[in-house]
Image (cartoon, rainbow, N blue to C red):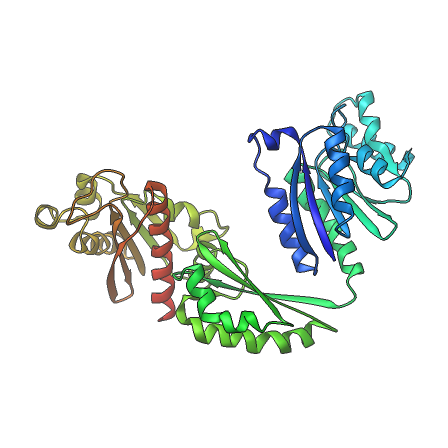
Length: 411
């Protein structure tokens, strides 16, 4: 099955809102064997929207729209799509009652224009909106399908999960199983080079690589009679890819590196503390986003100045004079001082030059030292990162997490 995603809204074209819906929907559709051929953005213009629906409906099996289902005059997606498909709109008393009940729950008066949202394309399936007033619809006509979803992600995503995904499952006769292989520390081109012979000969399972949150994600998907049958096809392929890529593979779930490391620390009950300089608390920020991390996270310092490194971590003044704040010796002294101060099993220190200024020939912008003290082992890692200030800092934070992972897992 082939699909096109049409995002409706002038605010998207003006750059005021980022279209995250298309990325999310493409991921969901691919999970259920639907190939997305187009992402289209159309402003709040009835003619252009109608032209887009008619044009792309000739080429694909399914059109998915997001946005334009609200109560105002410029919210015309439902009307335009119904017109393009030759489907009439009729007032649905059940939808009207549900919309009235929604306003009553939030203690607001419903205006007359909200009745517009209770009109339903004839013969369509309704998808309930538990987070707003705009219901979604699935229209089937002449072998084609139109799926109408609200624009706000907080409404769209739950509707997809509760209404659209069950529909996709019903349409797909075979069971679809996906395993994700998450990789950090190897570029996309290197990953593809390592597995290109597998990619070229893929049939079932299929493989696809993505750049995700500073790491690489490899999706392995199989179609079959059951999940058990699919896993018999997937597992040997996953094992082969893991063997080729080695310790850059950090997870077989679709999760970011910080989530994986946070879970690892909590599962193994490893107390930890952080001393960050150039990353400025980035590592702490990503880890404290996880529920339950307080069970293992003792404390974090942002020791940006030399004085802070001395006062909070006990870095000797002579070390700073002889070697500088960005050095292996200072990185080592940071975690040694942190360990003396609180006794955490894991202590991590980061010091570097994020730029754009402050570099030299001997110590260029992007030079970062990461120190990890785990149980009785202390290691200092030297890196030369590239990019702007934000990229250097974020990359340093990610590599610090990866070094933690490898030391804990003995890799």
